[in-house]
Length: 232
Image (cartoon, rainbow, N blue to C red; front, side, top):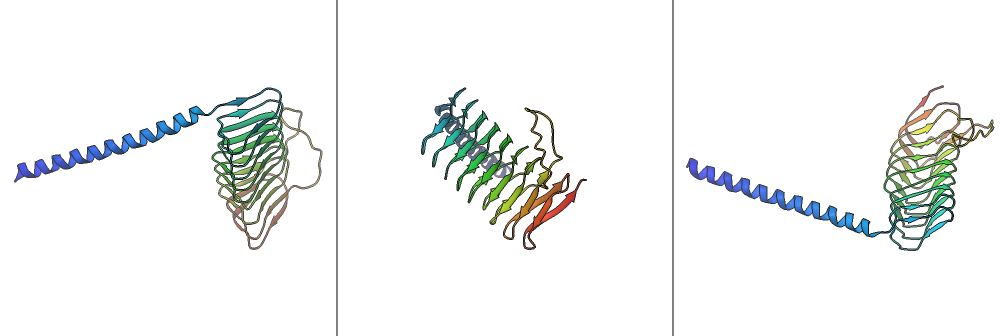
């Protein structure tokens, strides 16, 4: 009987190993297929001039120094970057990330961003149905999240933050200390008006609102905010 049980256990172990090997092979094959598909896409790079990714076009990294980057409807790209120029991503498009130094970032409806959005001197607007996987940050500019979702934090030093029309922020909202100085570190706006942090009735912030200076806080009584912390 012991020999029979041992034989059965050996067969079971062999089957488990076979299944495990098949699963690993399938996962690795899928990874290679995705990697080859991305490798097949072309990088688009310029120094001077704007770049447009056509409707439904598939691209890899898209970058320029002096110029804007525009993605048409249903386009797909990896990392988007520019220094002096804005970034516009039209409806139903998909990217990994977008960043600029001097320029705004504007997303249309139902845009998927797997990682983050970042700018230094410019605002960021995310519209209906769009999803940001990680953080949305700027230094000198406002951030508007309208009927969209952000998986990470929202952060600015000199600008307003508005979470509107049923938007969801999974991370924190952070208003940092006002930064002054000269480019490329930041602009000194010289604006004495208070910044605004607004969360309307249908929206929610699952993290904490961190305030490192006084702001005009407009939190609707029906808005859902985990907590608010004053650091000044």
